Length: 142
Image: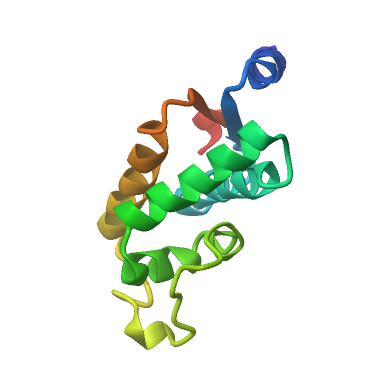
C-alpha cells in the first residue's frame, strides 16, 4: 500500500544522500499532533547525530548542520527546543545550554512559537543544500 511505497522511496532516496525521516499516525489511536511532529523532528536530530560517526562527508555535514542551527537559533531558543527535541544536546555539544529552564524563552512553548522555532530549524538545514523528505504517513488518522 501507500506506506510500503513511502518506505521504498525513502530507502532509495537515503542511498542517494537525501535526509529522509517519517512518522506514522496509527488508526484508532488518539494522537497529539504536536507530539507526532516533534517526534519527526527528533528523528532528524538523531540522524544528524548518527552522521557524526559516519564518513568524512557525513561528519562534516553533521557539523555544518549543528553550526547552522546554532546560528539560526540563539541559545535561549535552543534551550526551549530541547524540551521537545532532547537530542539537540547531543548534536550541539558546545552550545551554551543552561540547565535552568527558567532562563529559556518559556518553559512551555505556545503552539505558534513552537511552529516558528521548528520552521527556523528546518530552514537552517535546508540552506545547507542536502535534499530532505519529511513524511507524515497515514495523516488521515490524526
